[in-house]
Image 1: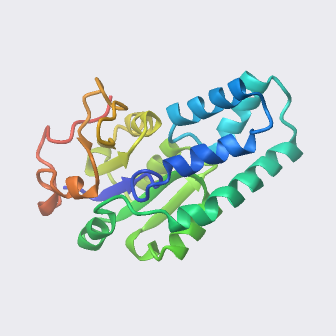
Image 2: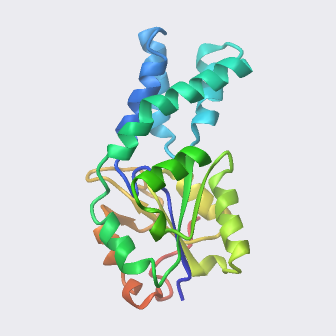
Length: 226
């Protein structure tokens, strides 16, 4: 019996991936073009990683400069200023609101995101989504920590939950907690190629997964992420 669905937010509930990639490029626009290219490529390849960890990686591996506490706080503040209003205005992933309206009263739904907790909660509130979710969790906690917290707090076995994400980091978080995983893959995308997890193109597709209407997946229909 399915007792919880845990969603990533960016790219699963709302279409925001390009917004955040552009924000990273704007923050480091004064650097050499090649470095900006590396920053953008790393950001795109590491969806699901918090901006905190990305900033540290950029300084350590690309800029080779110390990231002071003041610069770190400035980057976090400016990034939030660049993306906040755009994320609030971004379109929903197709089927997201109908899915939540249909299922949230029967299956507790949660958000586990790399977006900072306060910012995430403000976005959820301003988009009037809070009524759909039993819990909204963001960084600095890792997604695997959030999933483990939900399982423990609600006394849910891993195979009674489902995590829906759009990045390999999401898959790894689910695997760390032994929770079944479904990947949201854009048309023509290859993020989950060769992994063997079920994929969907939107939240309409999630509703069509076998067994969801009965709030239970048959054995083998949603395999454990590995």
